[in-house]
Image (tube, rainbow, N blue to C red; front, side, top):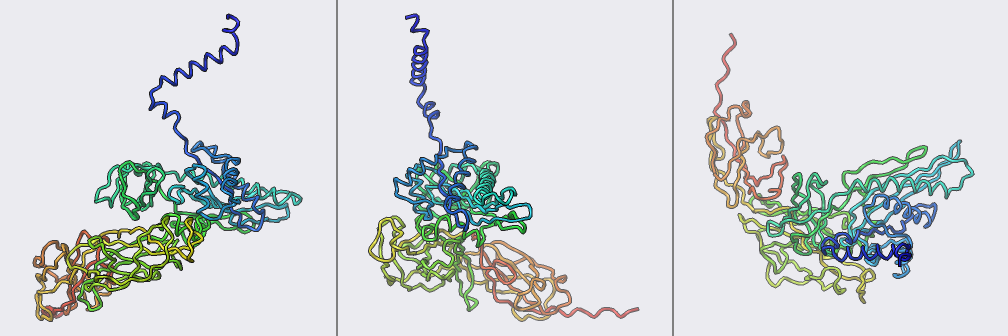
Length: 578
């Protein structure tokens, strides 16, 4: 027994028993923390769109990125063998080019992020001292839940100059390894802490997050909200404090709730180009330009962008509603306008835009062809035909139901009444790109309804009262008045030397007043003192509207009256010179 107690086997058994007893005695919460799953990232073979190196160079680029990522201990980087086995299980042939296949692979691997990339270009440089290689590498990290790129960079890589007998393949691999090191370093600097939703004020239109400026959150960033393995919504950050921030919902698939997670969607790529004599140069873009859009489309695929986010890729980049006046200069309207984002700009699969008002749900209040980007909502109701499609992507593949007539006219605007508008898109995809299949050529779906940036209040132009139109011999001390406008709570009084009010240098803003229809007496002797005839007008607005009424030619956001004119008392001639 003594010999057994002192043996190696005895020590192993005793330590194993002690360890098992300690684990069994741990509180469950502590044990669950220790065994918590580390996020998994899968790096898959990159697409080589250059004319050099073939698919092998794309695989080498992926391996180099995976190796560098593993050094940051940010997540568990799945090994090459695991990824290759998933290819075989799903009967995929690398490199994958369709976003749908990329997401399926990520789901099969239970990965949180799939790192994809492209060798955009490659070249061999020759000089008197030998030769070298340059590559341009694009790397993006795709969130498996949302299908969105939450990391992204484009970099250049160059090999050292070698004697002329070295192989091109060796130089290209060296350049790729260098580019991979730079790319991963860039990706790690983009990290913004994952935020948690604290509250959802404003009937769910706004979201308060527990991360702010100190954690890297910035105004204008787009964030995706997830709940477990589901995408819930898209936000745009509108206000940031040091340790908290506010965002408004720009796409709502499901209601956002406290405890949901939000993370920044990365949509900026630098522009990389060749330098003369070897090497590359990088120019940072403020926003993704046309070339950046092409790089993004390479990763996600033009068709898959339509379907990967339940139609979210077809949502407008910005939807705005503004009070205005119709062509007659009197009738109020609301101008609804939108800017298609990079995934639907010029997209032939856009079928029909539908504009909705939240206080009227039976039908849209306006229907436009997919090529349109604006419409006026007027006093009259609309009788346009429309496609009644309620299915989001992922549902059954349905054929085009065709335009249907409204049972009743959709209502026109109500002057003085504030309204919220929403926008949705009816789009189509090839039945071949739908996992549910279909016998027809296309499947038709709708996006979710995106709210406008803010509400709009249609207003009649103010009716001017005093001084009366075409008044003469008016004193320089004037009290301006007008009829109150229903729905308006701020007015701007302007004077100009021209009836059109077109040039800023010929316009003076006299006074801004709130909740009243007249001004105090104002001395205008210093306003264009050498001009006898002057024109005046009044603009009205509702302070709660965002962004406010349509801008006029001088940049003012008010609904303006037609101008009146008056002539001042002729000043006495100057005294004769002494």
